[in-house]
Length: 195
Image (cartoon, rainbow, N blue to C red; front, side):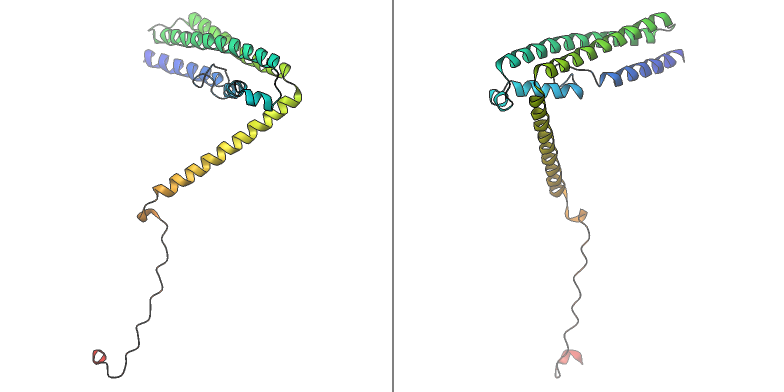
């Protein structure tokens, strides 16, 4: 029973800390859940010289942003790895027959500190972007992102509609009203079938 209670508490702690990490940055498609993906898209866009030219991003701006994203990604990788280790350690503490509450509290504090560091790293990178780019460049990039998101959603919806149409089977289609019945043809005088 104690082991079950310990597992429930560990699950609650891990679930609670897991929600807050949704806002944490990360270096790749695996790491950033939703906030970091914005920055990842910006990094990919900055690697394209034609996109840099489109938004008027100078070589100095590009160098500064690239360096900031690289440093942020390295810190995020380390932070995410440390966070996973601390969560494993917490789960191990919670699996003990006699849980040491002081050690659990200490581990929770360590996890919270790592999450805070990850958030500071992410926000710091976003601030570098805001400090490096002009308001006009930021507005143009924001409008471009919104148009890309709209286009993505439209393409996705069209793909789903096409998939739904392909998946329909004759038995699954809405019932069509039956064609109206034709009245029987009038019989002709002298027709032997009518007698």
